Structures are given as C-alpha cells and as structure tokens.
Length: 245
Length: 131
Image (cartoon, rainbow over all chains, first blue to last red; front, top):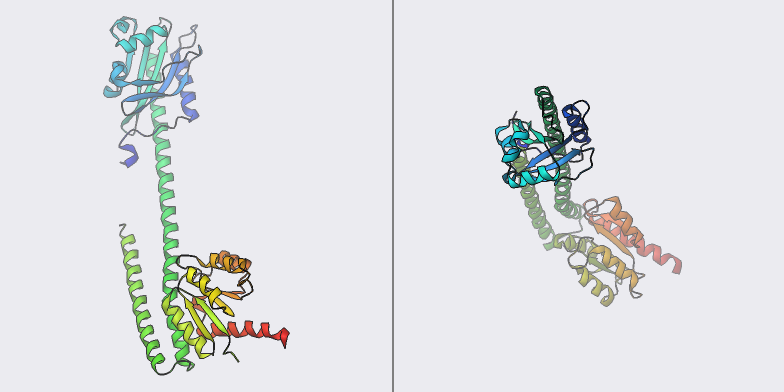
C-alpha cells in the first residue's frame, strides 16, 4: 500500500509514552547481568538530524538530544545502510571529533545503533550506549532489532491513524462546505423568486395597470432569467465537485 | 385617509424596492426609498416617515446598526420599524426584535400585499388610543 504519509519518514509523536517504554526495554535488553543499567534512547529522523524522542538513563546525564548525520558518521551509516552498527572498544579511536567528544564526556565504552524502519523508510534510530566494557552479545543485538521492528510498527500505526483522522476531518469539512453551499444557493434562489411571486400576486389582484403591468412582466422575465443562470451555475459547481475539481 | 402616511423603505435590491413601492403607492401611502443604510438614516430624519421597512444586508451601514441608531436618536426612536430580510435565521430574528423591530418579515414569504397590510395594521393600532 502506498499512502502519501509513507513516502517520507512518518512524523514521530514525541509525547507517545510507547517510546519511553521502548527506551527502557532497550536498556533492559542491553544491560548484562550485574552491570548498572545501560543508556538507551530513541532518536527520530527528520531531514538530516536525529532528535531524541525518548531517553532512558539511570545516571541522569543529559545528552545533546540532536545529532546532525554529517557530524556523526556512525549514525549516518545506520540510517543509510539500515544496518545495525555496533561500535566496540576497538573502534572508539576512529570516531569523528564530535563522536569522540560525546563518548569521552559520557565515558562511553561501546554502543549499538539500531535503525528503525517504518513503511519502508528509516524513521529513526535506537541508540544504546554502555559505560561498562562488556560489549554487545549477538542475542542482545537480535532482541534490540526486534524491539526496533516494534517501534517501527508503532510509528507506522500512529501515522496511518493520523492519516485516517485527517482524511475524516477533510471529508467532514467537505460535508460542511456542501451544507453551506446549499444554504447560500437556497438564499440566492429565493430572492429572485420572491420578486417573481410579488409581481405575479400584484398582477393577479389588479394592483398594477397600464405601464406598471408591462414593467412587472419585464421584471418577471428578468428574474426568471436570473434564476436560470443561478441554477446553471449551481449545477456546474456541483458537477465540478463531483469530479473532484 | 392614508394620504399622510409616509413609508421609508431602506432596501438595496432595486427590484424588490420598486415592487414594494408600487404596492404601497397603490394602497395610498407616500413612499421614500433609500438604497443604503447611511441614506436610510439621513432620510429617517429628513423625511420624518411614519413607518420604516428595513433590509438587513445593506451597503455602508448594515440594517442592525441602522436600527440601533434609529433607536438611539430621539427624533427617530418612536418610528415603528419592520425588518425585511432575505434571511430568516432565528438568531437574526431574535436580534432584530430585541433591538426594537416590531416584526421580522422574510422577503421570500412576503408578498407586496402582506407587506402593505403590516403598515395598515401598525398604523391602525397606533391610531386606536387617540380615537
């Protein structure tokens, strides 16, 4: 199914508590027994920037929150290749200067970046970082990948929901417009009809004679024409709407 | 007997104004027509009409404001006003009557004779106490 909402990364609702829970679960999955909890976050992709939507960090340390892909090549690699990036102790020496600064400041010894894909498009990255030196096991990485799939489904589900809601609002708006159109159309038609009725009633009861009679007939003809034009316009408008123009 | 009764018709739709004017004249009233709210207010003072028909959607000054200003001016405050509107929505009706209009007529339902009857009804009831 190709819905316009899926052609670009779906907008991630940063207040969705699902992502907080996901971050906590990611930290739980990734923390080896007997170690203090690792840090995990879900970063949503918008343009070339990953921004933290949910973070779990028992140490309470504050991270930048925004990561430009051009300054953090490992993040960029995860987004572009859609492959999980595990950066271990041995790779820490090859980081970009921004990456190295971050890792040093927060004493990070290793990290795993798991792309989150939704509707065929990368919606963000789950990032887990360790201050211990135990690294990441295959089992942890597999479980993190499963979690990333769940997060991706959530993003897609919320986007589809939003698209449905917007569609419903649009059609409600259309209905309202249709109602207003009918209302205006009725008023527009009633005003010449009122003149026609008025003159006809005066012709019938003999109020008008001579030149006035002639004038009344001219008015009636004029107002009939006006009604005919209005009806043509209204039908044209209705036809264009039916064609979706 | 109606020769001295003067009706001011504040109405921007020429066809409607002309139609009602013909009927009112046929019934023996003197008729003055104003095609916007501003002229209507001026004529209400200059012509001292006994009776005013007031459209609501008017150029320059809309009908409700005309009514308010007629009521605020001691020279015109007592002149009976009947609203003659294209729209019959209850909110409009309520607002018009609250501002002091005697009646609220919807044009599409108001034949010239019904309109003219309203004048005789009001002038007759006004005349009663003095009889």
